[in-house]
Image (tube, rainbow, N blue to C red; front, side):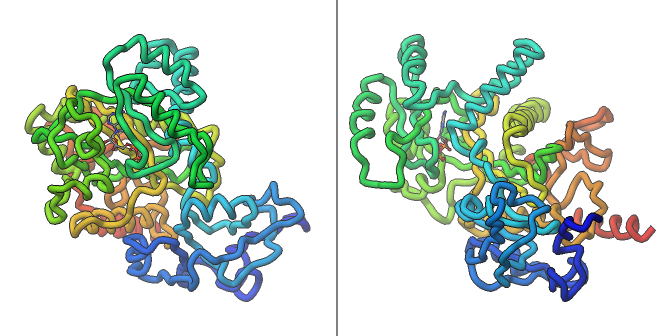
Length: 466
Ligand code: ADP
């Protein structure tokens, strides 16, 4: 090792620059900026210890060359003792403010990639998808480009207003949905049929704003409204799918088996397009509906949904529909693969929102980098508790696994620089008698995570011993 090379903290002996020593010899120190299920999971994890003080660690600023910060070669100049964490579930704002001036030791893991918004801002997600679609058509032909037809026609406003108007005039009578690009929980969304509705809105919207933090004019997307959603009991729903990316280069993606469908509380109809309780399935909106029942909620587990759809349409039709979700996940991640600042310290757990239409075709509605981890009831708590515990099992800071696993608890490895195929023992959702290779994708299938983890750790231990 040359004289100038700095040794990452985890490689140094106890008592030197990283007084806490190597993970494995000691507790794992974590920070968490949220007060919900994730904190319960971290607190309940054997051998993990909370670093006192929320969100107040000092970044290890490298004043001399801040551009290079975030890379291993830069030594920390200042280290607050609070900065001695191994794992940090931080919020996006914290990362945005600190990442560029932060030094991370080899072993440290932190939530979020620096520019996660490339996928999670509604306008940027569509821009990136359109670009990869075009590139695919150029290089592989129009037919291949069809595999990108899972996001509704979308334009950014105000920049693409004129193209939108042209498109609008070509399709008179259809419904459009207008959404602020960077807001969440259904805020600021409305549906419209006439161009006049949006010119009126434009006049109001672009007046001086009372909120100084909002862009002027605020970026919106206008999107073709899916007028024929799949309905259950006359109600519309969308599906929350959890996806974990542990690396963008190579792209390594895990898909969680469990999730939920969020139903609207009111029967679907196109007669009342101004009624958000009918058209927006966000829990944040639905819980304010006059007849909302908090005990019943408005959720189904993805298992329940898969079972229902399989009984109604057959296993094969449902497999095809769910395969469409895998395609959405992979294509969307590939669309930003070259743009996301890949950093081995970072990981991201995305919440995908997918809507089925009446032909069971899945549509991508949006991707969240901070899906809600607040539980809406016991079942929801159990789901999120298992999900997050298994996420930590995949990251494996304890170093208990071999690194070759295709399934860890409820997470299945979907992609690692290419599609992953299932092992024989992992075919619960495959049709009877199938021996052909099937993708390692089990959304909505059994999730006996505890049993699986027991077997997994026993197997990993004996492999490691030998
Ligand atoms: P937010 O980030 O505010 O939740 P979304 O894009 O997820 O915004 O939209 C909120 C809800 O509106 C979705 O959960 C879905 O029910 C409905 N929705 C959004 N876009 C469409 C669309 N193009 N067609 C049909 N429904 C949509």
